[in-house]
Length: 231
Image (cartoon, rainbow, N blue to C red; front, side, top):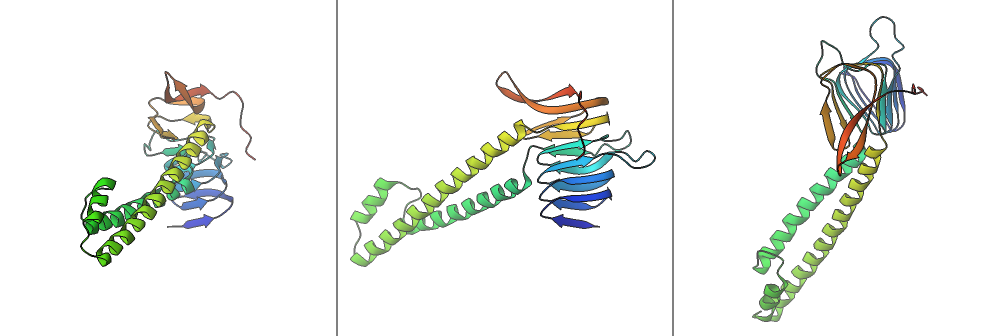
């Protein structure tokens, strides 16, 4: 299958069963059909093609800063998934951080085992140091303790970065929308930030965004009053 990756914007007449990754916006003039699209910016599908192929149908379309399409889904295709308010690069970075933290935890556990303890219990470690039979053994334990301290500091920094990413993702989700100018067909799945919703009924001229209700986030459907511009 066709795959296209770019650090900036990508423009095409149509996308049929292709994989597209863009750091910026993705603009597909006519239609997207059973494709995998991931954009760090917005995804636009003006539906300027001839005939009835004026839709975003099937596959996964992910626009970090929003999706605007002439129509979404189809009565004959129930596999359309839209994702907005989630930055794919940040998701990749968070996954990398979690992998690093698991590696750090493995190293820390190995060092703790070397010290003869099963957790970072400072009192037990001090007792172990006090009972060292030789200066060489004590030096070896001190080296291990210093390494554990460095790993713990690295884990704290990584946890702070994870929290920062989560905060940025929440802010992004709060200002991101999915806009459908004409028809949105039932059984399409939409996700905004951490919230996911299955469309149960066909609708027209609709817009979706996150709102807070009773201190909980939910996806709200509104009537699309102002037609977005396809820049």
